[in-house]
View 1 (cartoon, rainbow, N blue to C red):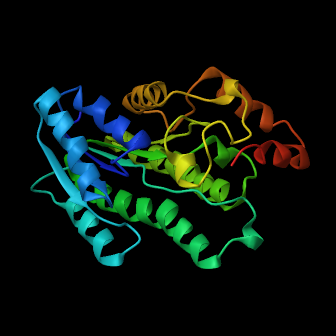
View 2: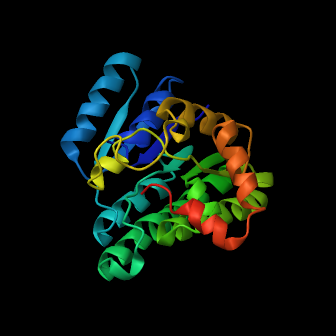
Length: 254
């Protein structure tokens, strides 16, 4: 089990659930998100329930100075991070041509550049110690055509596979956790009311099971974790579909 884990996007959703389940193991936490008050509320609950140490690190990873602060914390060999969870993210409508291009650039920076920089910093202090784990929260969208969100998550999956093969034998594993539609506040932040996402009930996952399966697969050193049998079957099916049909599958929901 890790001694200290750093989680981005930790104030809500999957990030808060990762924090809760990792805290259950007795590990200390460094929680990163933009909202200091929300982070402190999460930290207070975890300290009270599990008696761990929690460091709150407010940061907007789209701001260079803030990102550099988190990179420096991950790279600190005097206070090593044993598990890095790259979870921060947001969604955009699927119509790339209609989206604001500056929003798309921010989307790319948060989903690709930030985890790349943090992973590089983590490897710099994990490899000399011969141990460590990196979890990149990707998505099943990374396996199918789904706008720039799918493209970003596809990068995370490809990078995680390579990094796990490259550095896993040296004691540092990298796992892309790829959930499908999961009940969190992710869709609410996109302005979608609950039940209005155009996704059937059977496709929705529970955040607790997604995180539990992702953590188990990371502990086993797997490069890619697709929580739930239904989504593993769907990912397998999309590999057999013509590109045009796979694209229509990717257009479900938002």
